[in-house]
Every structure is written in structure tokens, then in C-alpha cells.
Amino acid sequence: MDKLLITGGKRLAGEITISGAKNAALPILCAGLLTADTLALSNVPKLQDVATMQKLLRQMGLVIEDKAGVLELCGQNIDQLEAPYELVKTMRASILVLGPLLARFGEAKVSLPGGCAIGSRPVDQHIKGLQAMGADIRIEGGYIYARAKKLKGTRIVTDMITVTGTENLLMAATLADGETILENAAREPEVTDLANLLVAMGAQIDGIGSDRLHIVGVPALHGAAHSVIADRIEAGTFLCAVAATGGDVVLKNTRTDILDVALDKLREAGAILTAGDDWIRVQMSGRAKPVNFRTTEYPGFPTDMQAQFMALNCIAEGNSRVTETIFENRFMHVQELNRLGAKIQIDGHTASIEGVTGLIGAPVMATDLRASASLVIAGLAAVGQTVIDRIYHLDRGYDRMEAKLSAVGADIQRIK
Image (cartoon, rainbow, N blue to C red; front, top):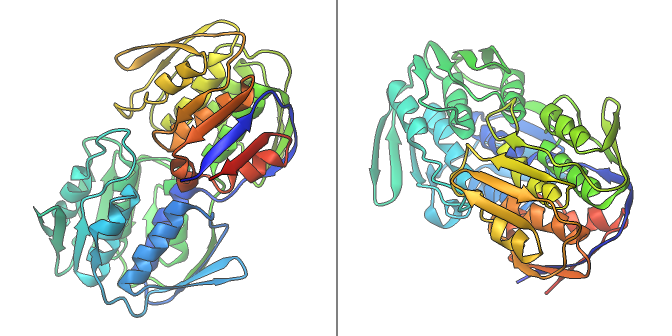
């Protein structure tokens, strides 16, 4: 099993190119099930989760070819309407095949998902929404069995804001009879990116980017070309790494308009930020100032950036408080950060951090994707060597992170 070996204390300088967003690429790949025509997708990140999704879709009969970095998807010969446990157990996003399969083929058999251990993340909102559209759904033996002769448009109000739930119901509604209203819809940029692709495929969707989506079903969708949105979480992670270690780095192929809250907090921490249409420059000298924040749905502070900012707060000049409202188990990185010399105490959903003058390298273990990123940031800032175990979590969501960091001066290498 691979590990990362980091010798901390190196100043970062240079350029990093941000990859396409994992959380946009996964539902967009599933949209290939909605049409018999060809989708041409560019800026798709090379990640373990993306490879797993492609394996699942190929097993269903979706043809996927990589042509000079552009993925061409053809759904003309879909013949397996099942997502088996063996593939679904490693990645929760596999549930995103349910809506497209049901909408286009009238049936689906999808294993209940697995993935990160950061919380329950139930799929009941997906099921309730599809049932409201006329689907007959039962859960048996760990599988969701769904049938619908033809989905019917309706008004759906989810009990909670759910990103994958919004995406699943949005894809299903594009081929349903009549009009569908999705209330309390997720507003994340990755949802907007999927919606923009669906419109390019011939879907009729109003309210894109808002919490109320109005979809008029069409008989069929056609092919399209689309470039996946930049990964705002990858960009935010590298910004925190520079803020924690000092330096001067330009991020290319990124956008500021989907990073507003994180950028505001970085400025509060003392980083100097300048930006253009597709780049952000971060400069940092001296210790960071502590920042308080509370995670919430977009456009609020993203839960996917909580661990990285906590790593920055660990070495800030003062005390801070972090409240996690999205996932109940998303403080598992705390005990590992404390192994490096951080001073963090947990009380329910709130972490209190006392900034220290420095961290000291030690062996640590990654527990989930974003926890892995926080340990990398802490290791880069620590004195001495840090070894991070179980980095397969990191590979699920970051495209060659160690290579990108090495290119700007970090002493980081993958070891067996």
C-alpha cells in the first residue's frame, strides 16, 4: 500500500494547474446513460473515483474511448441495468446511475452505496423523489430495485439539501413526461455544470444555479461536447498549503467565482490574493491568523474545505473555532493532527483549536479524502518527516497531488 513521505518546512513557489472537478465529472459521466448519441467530455480528471465510475458504466454497456484527452461516451448499446455491490461499495456516487437508467430504460438495480466513512449520507431523498415521479421501488438484499413504465413530472420538495439527490432527480426529470419542479435543490457549481451539459444535450431546464429547478421533460436527449468545471476543492486545498507554508504560487485553470467564501477566509488568515479570469495567485509570509467558520451548503463554507482550513488554524497565531454541520463524522482527522503537535479539542460538532508555533513530523493515517489533504498540508508545514498511510483516500479525489506539490518546491514523495 502506497504512503506519502513529506519533509516539511519548504517554501512553495511556481505554478499549479488545477484539474477538472471530481464532483462534477462523476454525474456528468452518468449522463452518458441518458442518450444513444455520443458525449465528448474534456477536462475530466484522472482519479480513482473517475476510473471506478468508468468501469461501472462500461460494465453496463456504455462505450468510453479516450481520444487525445477527450472522453467519448456512446450509450447506444446499454444492456446491463445493474450497478453491483463490488463497484458501488467503494464510491457513493455510483447511486447517480439510478435516475438515468430509470428515466431511459424504465428499470434499474443499484446496490446501496458505500464510500467514505464521514457520515450516513442516506439515499432516501433519491428514492422518495423517484417514487413521487411514479417509480415502483423496493429495497431488498442490499439493492435498490426500481421500475417505471414512464416517469411523470411532479413537484418534489426534498427534506434536506442533497447534491447527489438533486443530480439524480434532475437527470431523471429530463426524460419524464411533463413538468418537474425540484424545490430545495442543491446550488453547488457541480450541479450547475451538470445542468449546463443536460441543456446542451437538449434538456429544458430553468432556474439553473438556484434552489428551484424547473424541468420540462423531452422525448430524447442528443449528443454534446462539454468541458468539466475546474475543481474548486483542489484549488482551495493548494491555496491552504501555500498559506500554511509560505510562498508565492499561481493556480491556473481555475475560477474565483466558485471559491468566494474560501477566498474570503484566506484573506482573513493573512494571504494576499490576486486573480484573473482563470487564475489565482496566493502569496503568504509569516504565520496565519486564526479564522472561525461554520460549514454549510453552497454558497456557504464548504464541508469539503473544513479539514484543510483546520490544518491552517493549527499553526495560526491565536485560537479558532470550527463548526461542522453537514457530516457527523467529519472530525476524524483531529486525532491525527494532534499527533503532529496540534492542540484541538472536540465538543459535539465544534472543534476548538489553539494555534501552536510549529508542528513536528510523525506517522499519521488518512481516514477519508479531505482528511488526507489536511494531513498533507500539516506535513508540509511541520518540522521533520511525516509519513501518511492509507493515501488511497487521497487518490480518489486529487490528481497526482504529490507531483503538483513537488513541482512548486515541496519535498514530498510516494513510497511503497
